[in-house]
Each structure stands twice: as structure tokens, then as C-alpha cells.
Image (cartoon, rainbow, N blue to C red):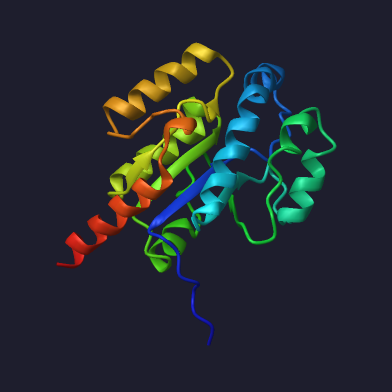
Length: 200
């Protein structure tokens, strides 16, 4: 029986970036999302350099027979291709399909995080004022330490995203520093120290 690989107690959740943008205000979200795509890509690259697992949690857009490959190919044929192609998951990334807004609702995410002994989460993706916010709220209620970089989420309207980030910072006690300010080695060290305190 194979065991789960050893990871730091930190994971990066990338939410709904494999997106068809096929809804009435989709063009508005694409406009807001394109500037943050390089930030999320860079965040992911730095996370992987530090051994942090990357977990995509994504809507299936009603396509219940989809898997990662089918969903990516579908979205690469849609209007948001320029955004999606910058953030295509790699073979060693985790990929979870979610049916509703939160990454935790009716998904195996909690089980996966527990199995990997993750206690700290970094969240990025779309939309900041809906799926990222709902996921951050559910993570907070599960006692995860949270980082939600302010430059790695977008909403249809920029002011809505700013309000969501403020709420996440003030109510959910998340660190919302920009992705360029995050010190991954420090985040991992603090998470490891918190894990030791929990065990003691």
C-alpha cells in the first residue's frame, strides 16, 4: 500500500481558474482576471520550488462527466483562453471538482488536507468575492491559518474584490499581503512550529 508523499504543512489552493467565463458578466471577469494570471502563475511556481503541494479546486460548469483534461480542453476553446492557458495544471498537481462556491462543500478537500497534514492554506483564484471568499470562510471555520494574496484574486468589479479581501483580512484573520511579499520559507517554518505545538 503506497503512502502519501511527505509535504510541508502548507498547501496552495487555486480556485476556479480553469474557467469558461460563459455567463452574462464573463467579459467583465476576464478583464479583471487577465492582469492577475502572471501573479498566480508566479505564486504557484514559488510554492512548488518550496515543496508546497498545489491543489486546483474547480467548478465543472455542469459537465459531470468531466475530468481535469476534458475540463481544461473545454475552457481552452472558450473566450477566456488567454487567461486559462497561463494556469493549466501540471500532472503532479492535485485537481478537485467542486459543485458549488466553496472548495470544501461536497468535495474530498478536507480529507486530502487531513491526509497530507496541512494546517496552513494559501488561496488564489476566481472570483474573489464569491468562491475565494466562501472557501476562505470554510477554511477559517476549520481552523486553517490563511494567506490570501491581494494580487492573486479577481472579481467582476474591482471594488467588490477589494471589499472581499478586506473582509477576509479583518474577519477571517488572513494575511493578505501581495504574492511578492510572501516568504515561503517563513510560512513553512511557522506552520511546522504550530504543528509541534498542536502535538504537544
